[in-house]
Image (cartoon, rainbow, N blue to C red):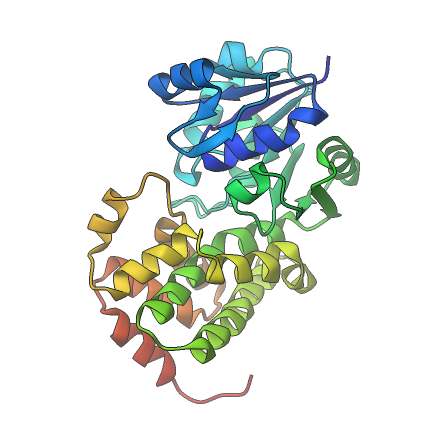
Length: 329
């Protein structure tokens, strides 16, 4: 039997379960919240994170790893980046040696500054990890809107295996050999999207948003190359595609954070009012530290960090970006 475990029943994990259900005999969706799992079993709907969309009949909701993981061929993890290390440590006794691991979490681990696949590889002890990323809003994926993504791995056989297993009529995967570029693009675009939200919230018009996206892409590319990734990866779905979506889409949580900051709300208040995690808030800190470690200039990320964690006002952050010393593109 072809079985997939999805670890994390937020909006993205639930959407992936729905869109991948026709591709597998059974999907086991692990939920952290016991009460939510009970409601999902009873109503066949994730009323907290993705209301109004029905779970297909071959999706089973679990709250313990023995039930969720035993005997599955595939594990797709979709938890917040801050939880990846701890959750995989709990999962480890239930993972059989031949299981294929796919990470769909977008972020960097604070402290170690590791990408998510690096964290998983360190905990699990092998490098058979693929990375799924691209321009995706969960609700659009779940309702069957056409979606294109990237599956990246240093192991081309694993990447093609995931591509074949996951691709369907509305869900198209492209392989990529550069997990560094794909994961850095996925993580840092959230930082830039907060800045895009600030621009929109301050009513600055379309010009600064376009400039921010373009210069943000340049920052992401510099960091990727310094870490050993490929610049061309950032011209694709996991770079430019995801960046544009997250900086302009109304469903973007990170853009929403910027919009609310521009209104004068405190970050603690914004976070407290959100059901789902805006990864860019904590990723900003890790991005700035990682850039300093490898000697890369990232002025947009630095201003977002100052605004989020040091109390700099949004207007001042934008002003400092515009008044930096002049240079060539």
